[in-house]
Length: 321
Image (tube, rainbow, N blue to C red; front, side, top):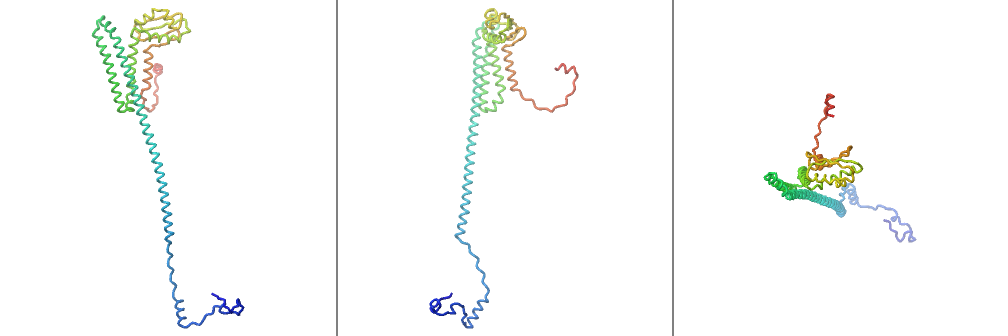
């Protein structure tokens, strides 16, 4: 490095050559040889640069933070999935409870209806016991009366036992048993309805027949003449004898003719004006209800392969039509 001396131009002196030119000073031979050796020696390879520990620590910390963030995100996802599974489980449990409650309610309703109908049958049998006993004794069928009364009571007990059996089975496996026994329950209810209805129309009270006549006559309120066909029994004969009441029952139709048929089934009520006939009989309506129920529980036919129709004679086709 150059050094300004006191005798330099800066201090107003002369020029110092050593201050501007690097002149080699004389060196002894030994020093020159050592310098040559130093120049001749090969260059040592540089040591590999060691990694910075602090930088490595920062890099490891950064990777650890990334892993922790990934773990936290995954835990959040798992928590959300767990929450969704819990909600789904609660919904499934609630749906199962609702189904069981509904099946239990339907089963209890069916059992209650069967019990009420059975009680009605027993009550009607008890109410008619005295009249049936007197008639049977007069006709010489006392034994038949006792057998009939016992049969009615036994039938009522059988219905109650059957209903109880249905209830126990339904409680064991509500949905499956309800589907399996729905047709049998329907048939039992229909039998009870027929029994109760026949008992009511076979008694001396003609209230049911009066209601049927009044309802059927509304279809012919503008007619001048109608004909009413009833089954022959004591109640209908008494009703036929009161002609004015019968006209009033038919809505004031001027001419009302009544025909009693001994061979007609109980509860027969047929109204005819000469051009139109209305069958309002109780058994007819029960058959219609039975047909509707049978149609509901009818098993679907299995599909079959269509076959080429075989031509039939013209006479047979006409007969089938």
